[in-house]
Length: 181
Image 1 (tube, rainbow, N blue to C red):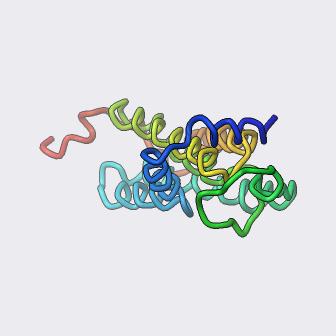
Image 2 (image 1 turned 180 degrees about the horizontal axis):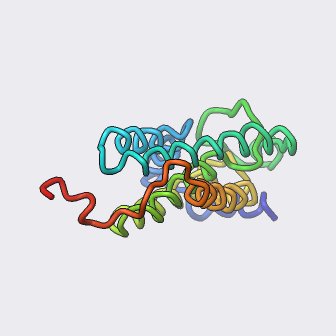
């Protein structure tokens, strides 16, 4: 069923106008770079420093669990290697497929942002995380179950970072982020 969903996406959703956009979106998740930059930006601003440290913690949790443990334990082959007719639109990956590290790190960071920041930051973070997760299906580099598990464990690991929170980051209101305050 996983392969059939990918072939359906390839047949009915992929198109020449959307493909370059999806390639850019998927690249935002490469090595968690977008979320690392968000964390660095937060670390540079005194009012968001503890929240930034919590994002870093969530990303580290995701790296350890997804890329360090689960990918190697499950060792699932990438779909473009086994699903007949599936074309991968990005470079071949050097690691295993399950779970999606892009989805895991994106949702880990977005969960922290959604919890600690006002909705005007949290909602776009979750939307971007969802777009990155979907882009992994669109480009043909992950199975739907890889992405689904990445999303779920990203939410759990982001929640764990907020709950454990050795930095004692507090939920920020719009007033906390007002530079003129």
